[in-house]
Amino acid sequence: MSIPARLENLRRRLPENDLDALLISTPENRRYASGFAGSAGYLLVSKDDAALATDFRYVEQAGNQAPDFRVVRISTALDWFTELVADLRLRRVGFESHGVTHSFHQALQKAVAEMEQADRPELVPTRDVVELVRVVKDPDELDLITRAVELADVAFDSVSPGIAPGMSEREVAWELEKTMREAGADGLSFDIIVGSGPNGALPHHRAGERVIQDGDPIVIDMGAVYQGYCSDLSRTIFVGRPDDTFREVYDTVLQAQLLAEESAAEGMTGVDVDRVARGVIEDAGHGGEFGHGLGHGVGLAIHELPTLSPRGSEDPIRDGMVFTIEPGIYVSGWGGVRIEDMAVLEDGRARVLSKARKLDLS
Ligand code: ZN
Image (cartoon, rainbow, N blue to C red; front, side, top):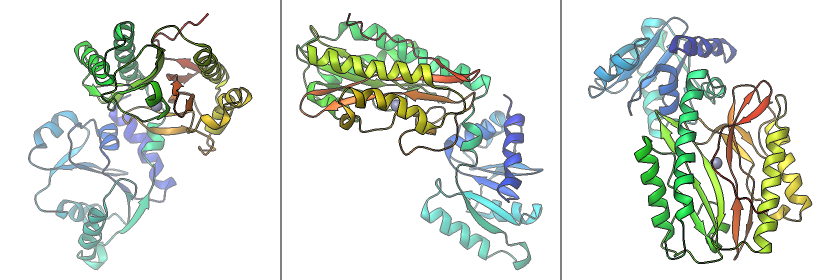
């Protein structure tokens, strides 16, 4: 989808939120709405105007990447903002309450207070205005996400067969990172997690010095960034011959995941989809060992809307949403199993994007 179409979707949300304009400051929203990929700048989007304010380092890049925006060079503090607000006669200007620092908010208030009384706008805190547009991916975004997914899949499938006793978690993480980079990843979605043995019970353990031993389950969680878009993939492997405990836990997690993937349908809420997987894990007696939500949206950010969890949103999932399905069981002192795919909702059903191998324990 073109930037003008995204802007149109965004502008439709202004009156819904009773706003004349929205000041966009979070990096992902800035990139989504304008195409500008630089690391500093603000967008001010109103019904008839779209301005991108950035400093001298980025003026040229902004002009190239965001042709639908008027590029304004930031000279001193917030003069650009107060001048635009006065010129455009904006009365209610939203800002991203979840995306600004306290000091930026103070500076914004001060700048507004120093404006001529007649020009002063009301600053309105908002949440998730752009995020709720971004939650439905357009075909261009889905292409980039698919590529990011492939990069993680290929790296996992090429590196995992070589994981053997004697390697450290860190070495495994580095092999995965190197392989993704060489295949074309621009970066990592997050530091790769390699949780071997008991470390697998810590859902967000990174990758440390522990040396992998025969009989270890290993949770691997990784993702690539491709042209700004993230992927997220978890697989659990076993070093040596899987024992009965591992088989039972792995099989339960896999059944929970497959059922959630088959069942996810347009109109269900994130709470509903989570409940499907959680039910399988509870029925197997592991209910207390699945301590996180089933999944989250993925796009320009590694964690975004929708939220699939017991405390997730009551908003139904819709076609075009991309999210993870990642049930897990974590047993303190023993280890963990997490299996994570990414899926897109299409024609009302989930189409699984992740193709990295899963264990065949039969
Ligand atoms: Zn995830």
